[in-house]
Image 1 (cartoon, one colour):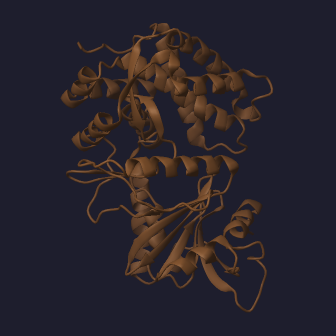
Image 2 (cartoon, rainbow, N blue to C red; image 1 turned 30 degrees about the vertical axis):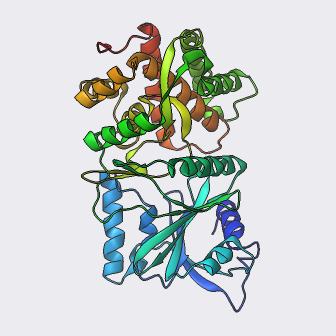
Image 3 (cartoon, rainbow, N blue to C red; image 1 turned 90 degrees about the horizontal axis):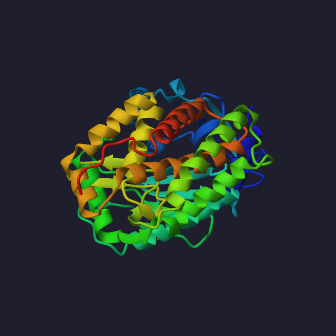
Length: 406
């Protein structure tokens, strides 16, 4: 039985009457998420699992799933991994058909997106066994804002010549809720769980080409955080009862944490930030970082934001480590000579950058979770680590890490 949410996505992309039986229906297959919702949707006659181009293999579990699917297709037994089949009528005026009419392709597949208010579906088209384009389709108003933001950032990045960093090319953005980009996946790459020279070199180049000096108390991203905190402190703001107490407690701590930065008129080096700098949004080669999904990018973000985010997200969501492990990993990162060069060149206070990171990222995601009906187990892992990190900052009056000599 196809859920209402899945039916909505199918109708949105393939046509409002896509589920009605007709003589012209196309047979589709699908693979579900653990909760039964559709993850990947593709024509049944698909010869290769091209939908795996949507899939990150940054964890051990994801690698197993990836190779099991690849093997099932190699052995010409895709039934082993498919969940089921659907007969769908691709309507002439649908988003999917309009896209298919534009390109010369051998096949396509659809990723239905991650649950939440930022949900986007992604369509890939391939030819000669290679995906050549990804089309993001915003499924919510919030997702439209993110798609528009990614368009602006990619347009800006296209004007800059990078040696250490590769970003997608914008192919079409004529519709506000849709963006078409090229596939930057190289033939040989890794999705590493540790920050290396390639990551740091790419960010150093990004900083050198986009950085400027602002005042802490004038940062727009700080004001966004304050608005999020006010929302969370409002008695009517939180709808998800599972996290209502945790949200209130964390929001009160965030408000206390914010006071120190809000009253600071000191200079701060800011630059363009990716915003979701994680192993699953990048490919790593020997000499380059290929970075995609720029939808959460901000133009004036304090330096070190992306590096801190990489450590938190990787250690919590993939390695399932606790706060003490994360703090230890950040201390090791601070010993890297290239990181210290960045901090000296741009006069970075790591403790202030770290404090800002927690204020911004926790208030942003807590607001999302507060109005989301179904929360994944990983949300509670994050909330626990965030709470411990913020409590540690408050207890140590914002001096968790030993600053390097500038």
